Length: 255
Image (cartoon, rainbow, N blue to C red; front, side, top):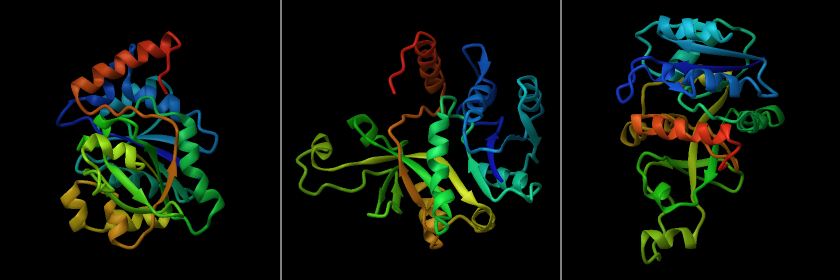
């Protein structure tokens, strides 16, 4: 069974109560759920939260929701808690609750490698960077991958480094750069292996948990998507999301 889980934590340091923040009259978590629900491959979709208010909101818009302990610190651990109670879940999709405009096709693109290649244990998404602002931003993780599309490294720095470039602006003229989109698909064993390991050295240095897989020798298949995402981490991001939603309602989509 392919199960999607949307971890939704109430206490965000930069935007308290983020999953319930309204975008166009709906809580953000509802946008995420409704978009993910359109996936062709997901057989079950669950919101995993530590908060009763989020539970109530989710039930009100018809979502399946599971209340998880408050002492669970990460989204991955919250997902593992849910999946442990679903023995039939063999492919698990980690869908970020703070990406209200995630497209179902992106979820399906990430799932496909695990359906058709038994050797693939974990997959994720990347999109080509086309702006200098995104390239320079430390809040946007970058990824480099090999000729078989397996991740070599993730970093908040610019990778690869273009030694012969005359400036940062010249980087984009000399190579292709990809930003990582934090949607993950795991096989069951890899999810539980991951959550049982302590944070690794590179993971702690970069503050990127996906490096834990690489440091333990677990390969990550990178699927390149043409579709954009919009993550909400700050009040400024929330305002951008509200403006973007207004454009969607008017039939204007910049993707």
